[in-house]
Length: 416
Image (cartoon, rainbow, N blue to C red; front, side):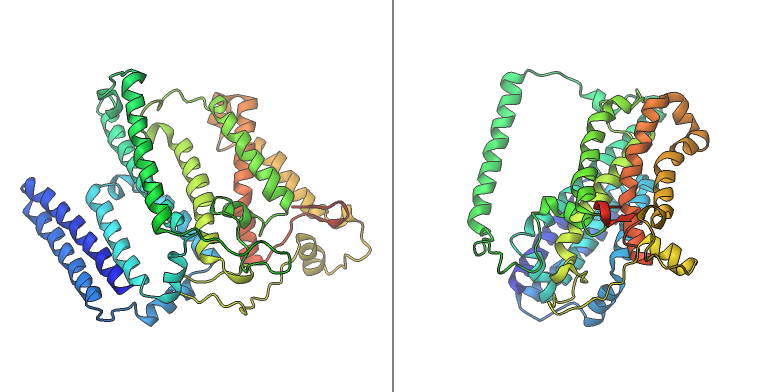
């Protein structure tokens, strides 16, 4: 592994030397020296690992990260990072700033790989595509926001967006077909190399007598599997995915904004872009990463550097809302109480959330949207957002007050 890290850091050296050469061509001596110095830092690390000097990440850093990392801090960090990216997008999408963040990430990633527990999880054949997913999502999110920032500045000056400058139309044959053919050949070549280098993680034939621990779905279903921690299967596996599909189908008909079509922009599509990034990056990609790297045996949460101990026992005392209301607040026992009266607080809460919140928003902070969209489109949009918001709400309630179900009706197999 030491040799592999040496090669990894050597590639980082080449990248930063290329960045330094770019600024040298632009006669920017300050930036040239800065990125040359960064390249030398990576060069020192490369030599250290190539000569097996035994540099490893300090133990106190690993303990600090593991102690600070938990589901609450992980989710809050993801939300805060997205907010900061959108709020300070002009600064954070600057190429120099983005390159600095990338270098810090690469440097720390190399250090982290010196930990055997982290290394074992990251290099597992199943998890390699997730590492590529993180890199690709980060790059294309930055690229889209960078183009949006440039276009917003151009539109503010009365200039056309960048996409309008190269609006030349080409024929499907031969231009598009040739491009697709070349892409197909490159992807096929890459998949062949992948199949040779990275072995398929095949295990023993499935048996009900012995199940792997943890039992994980394929990576593209890990988000749904994480939802099962907070919702019943009918909600996490049927209702929420169905609402996602319905929402994707309905969005073109709900959207009333005629601006921002055919080019990148954030100012003209603030709500749409923010909602999409929240739903895709925070509520989907981060859940996949959570289920892949931080969910270990018995589906317990583990820190990035924490060994996956199958004997780790985390006591959970999840409580239903009815128990909170009747037992903790009023001191009444729910034994012998009918299901309707027992779950009345949760039923009223769910009904209020789904039926009373949309009209309240239409009368207050979202009134301009209601006037422009009309009754049907507005309430359909708010309903879709409510279902999307139900996941982080339930996650936060589970993590903070150990709330299990808002409505618990086992007599009808109906739990929310």
